[in-house]
Image (cartoon, rainbow, N blue to C red; front, side):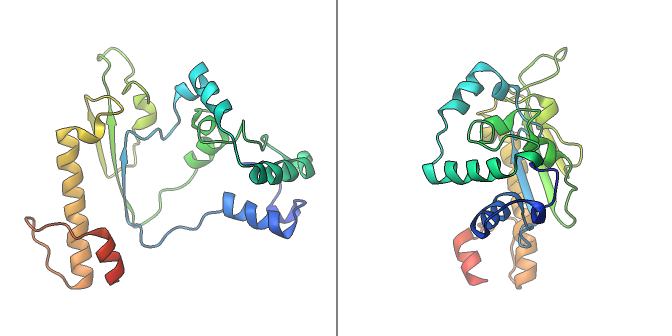
Length: 204
């Protein structure tokens, strides 16, 4: 996503190499086997490219130390750079542009085996429009590889409180509780209270 050569061919100090590895290389967390998305901009949001998004991006200010090592890495490896590595072009707002490198890179990842995905999107536009929850276009919020896909007539900030979404997510969590109970030898009924996450994790 960032450079056209492997990390071993970059000019990096040991400290900066560790930072790069922590920032750009990820290992799957083996205990995650269920993911629920609510109004998620899988393919970005046009708002990030509009004036309000550009203004928000300029307001983001990284700590001086982070700014310094980003600049050092970028300056020493300009000949291999595919994108600018600074706080204006690489932050949580600009990364939501539909054409941003992180969005494109995430779109190329394969769905991991053994993980169920449940996706909930909103659409408040009439049938003759492409669809949107007011913030995220439906074409960005919807994914064709989800195990559960639900589109509800709700705004971006209201999807989490939609009754149909709540019922569906409760069912997903109930099924996860059953799996957790079976793997740990506990019996979980459909009427039983969900275990507290902290206590469940600590007991394992």
